[in-house]
Image 1: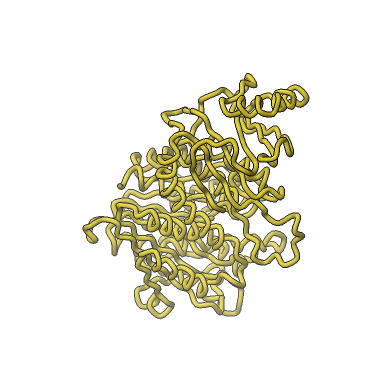
Image 2: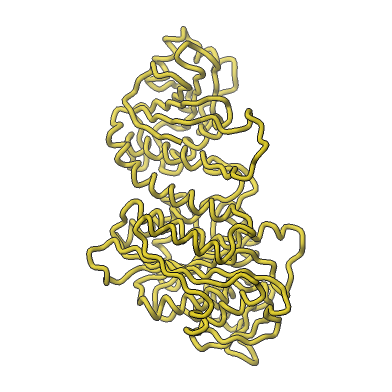
Length: 496
């Protein structure tokens, strides 16, 4: 999808989007076009139920030689745009036209503002939302009819301060490159993305200036990552850990922030086998790692002024004669022992070792892990709205909430306490990997906290937000790319 920024020109060929508020008052450009069309827009409003509510679209086909269609877009209560509202508006237009047969969309944005944003900022955000919604994962569709294939090739944002809008959009475009990479990784089936192929895909980040180091099973055994290795021992695919470094500061030794991701490329549950129905969805159990990897691409491509270390554990949880059993006791890299009561609570075993590794080797000033960790989080917060997060540090907790509100990747804080922590005490080991049916997301977070020491740390459970079964204004159903913009915003606002 080509995104451009130009001065307002109502003669440009293609579809043209213009605006009206909830009082049905036309924008300057909309009024001008209406006059040129002898009141066609006004007549269409009268003949329809268009009210000007935010996101409402009234379409007029073939109104003139220049315009294949006019789209009158409602903006609600006038100039009250926010970053999220602007992005959703851009996404809604793309969703409307992506397979319509239209090739070019011109969006004429007259003076607009809201929540401290000027017209250039709003134009950039509309463009970002449009590109977010334009993503499709269709590499395996070989017989799709032509009339269902995407037709929209270019979007032009027309506004007075188009040069500033283009400048503002450039880093957003880089971040969306990261979102696309995350969506690609999560969308791939388990026979394509497994620990070995995933590790090779991560190596492509070196083209963006990210230093990538891969550790195989022999190295992981040597350094003691036996909790992680236990998860993957039932698979014939070798487990890996990928370590990615982006040094955006002149001082390469400056204390970094650290991102950690669960990369279970397919989760059968192991010996504690999941039900067959819906198990195909477990290809996206590596979603947390996908977010981390996509974020590293985003940071590198926008040349973020920060040092970041990212670590992902790549394993496949399979049942076999060599798989770990319920009741096994494993020793983590930290030396703490874990009684494995359920092999389907495997992600926390992976994270335990790489959190400890990150803490001990990189001494980060803050550490965030992301994982599709618990179905209990979906019960708590549903899908497609909020991820749940836990934080050991109050400042970090507020930073993440604010980053979620600004980026549109929303996150809601969940509790930690000693009472919950006691639920994972084991009678035969230092801890057990499940704490019972109640408070499942919380006890999982308490488990992880035992491996973070004094480092300010947050755990984001993204089980309900990495994959969607419905279309929205920001994504087509499938991999959402949630989390990349959240982490990028958190880093931009607090560590650059």
